[in-house]
Length: 296
Image (cartoon, rainbow, N blue to C red; front, side, top):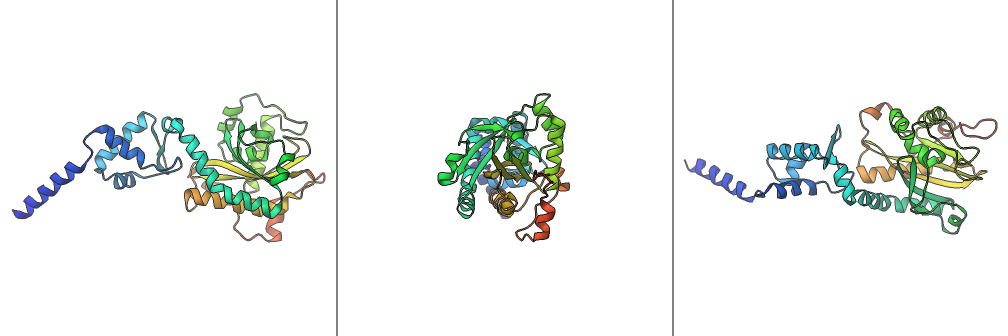
């Protein structure tokens, strides 16, 4: 009898500490997603909010229907309505913070200009640019844009999108920035396939700005590319020499943002980026040049 009373008392106490209103409970759930990239299971949300599992599931369903959250094989995450209320800017801030020390390290080690960008439709949007006095020679700027299909940054991110999404974004219109720019959607798909075959390493030489060359690797999260890092030089630059540095920097940023590598079911068939140690044989297989010196 005493045990039953104790249990009932405990239940009463538990009920009293629960937030009394639906708004408060929804706020608890939304607050459990600390960053735009956070992905949580139902059990993790219930544990973080101390709400009953059934209550948590019911509210999550409502938030999904209203667009405040989304749900994938990786779990629940912030949806378009939440990201539209400043979440995108918060995501950019977190991305810049994670990438900043790696960008500076790359610039110091190589004396090259380093970019951080995200994909915005058919454009790349530059979040950061590092390179000291050399940066003034590169016609890009923080907050600026460039056509994604004309840049190594953009092609590196487009390569990890579903082909049908690339088709939907471009439609029949794909313009040239220079005489070396890709101007055909079919040719773009061929280039994206080559990038995937190089384990995500993208190049461009004079496609966006004349006499400028770039190498880039995308930052990949559980649901696709979230940004990209590039290193910039002139057309004569031996960009293959810095490929391992860019790959390792991109991996370090992705790991800091998402922890251990988390690849979606769709992309588990994609090639895996090589590890920290690069032999000359590995490099030869990773990148290849044609007779004219263009990247294949």
